[in-house]
Image (tube, rainbow, N blue to C red; front, side, top):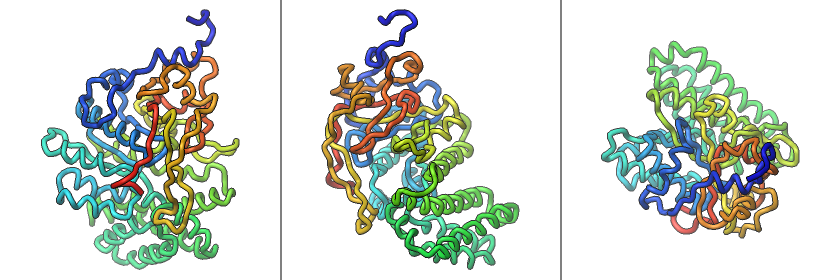
Length: 428
C-alpha cells in the first residue's frame, strides 16, 4: 500500500478496479458481465466506443455488452454513429417491418461500421420482447458526405405543408449536388473546389430554409402534426451542420481552418441523442455506439491545437453522471488505417496495419504493465481520479495516438489483448 497521503501507482489501482471478461462471443452466456452492473450504476446513457472502426473484437464486445444491457439491465434504445434521418427505416426494420433480406437495401451505400449485426440482434430480440428495443441515429447525413438523405424527405414534407417553399428546398438540393459523396472524406474536397459564390449560395439557401421552418412552426404542425415537424426540423438542422462540416473538414485536410471547427458534427450528434431522450418514456436507458473520439468527455487537440469538442462533452454537461463513457482499445494486434483516396466510394481505403508496442504513458502500456495485456478487461477509472501518480495521457487512435487525460476523458476503459481488422462480408 502507498504511504498515507501519497498517490498510488496507476497500475496498482488499475488492477484493483478491473474486471476480467471471459468471453468475446456475443452469444455466450452473460454471467461474467454481472460485475458491470456496479460500473453502469444508474447511468441513463452508456456509450461504448472503439479506437478504430472495422475491428472484429470491438464489434463483438459492443454487441455482447448491448445484449447484457438490454437483457439484464433494461436498456431499450440502441443509438449509433449513424445518420439521424437515415435511421428511421432501420428502426422500423428492427421492429419487424419488411423481410430479413430487406436490410441490405437499407444499408446500401453506407459505410459498414458495424451496424448490421446489432440490428439483426435487436430484430430477433423484438420478436418476443415485452419492451422492444428501438434503433436511433444521431449523426449528420451520410457521415457528413451528402445532404440528399435529409433534404429529400424535407422536400416531401414541404409538398404537404408548404408547397410554395418547395422550389427553395429543391434549389438547396441542386446546389449541394456537386459535393455529394459517401462521407466527408469525399464531400469536403469537392466543397473546396466550388467557387466561393457556390459555397455561400448553398449556406444561404439552407439558412433561409431553416429560418422559415422555425418561423412557420405553428402552421406546419397544424398541417402535418407535431412528430412530422420535429423530425423534419432535425433533418434540416442536420443539413446545416453537415454544410458547416464541409468547410470544417476541408480546412482540417488542408491544415487550415478555425480551431475547434469540427465540433459542429459532434454538437449535432449530442443534440440528436438528447432529442431522442426527450421523446422517450421516463426512465428510458440508451446504449450509444460511437468512436472513442466522439464519446470522450474532454476536448480533442492535436499538437496543442483544439480540433473539436466531442459529443461526450456535451452529453456530460447535459446529463452529468447519467452519461457513462466507455472507451475500447487494444494492446497488440492490428488496426484499420484509413488513408484518404477520393477515388474510393467513401473517400478512403482500409489497410490492416500492425500495431506498434504501446507507448510509454499510454493506457495500453498501463494495462500491459499491470499484467492485463492479454485477455479482455474492463477498468472503472472513476475511483482513480485524483488518487494516482502519473496517470496515462494518451490512448490509441487507429495506428497513432490521441494525447488526452485518459482518466478524465473516459469513465471506464475496455481493453482487449489483441485486435483484428474485419475481413469478408461486411468489410469495406
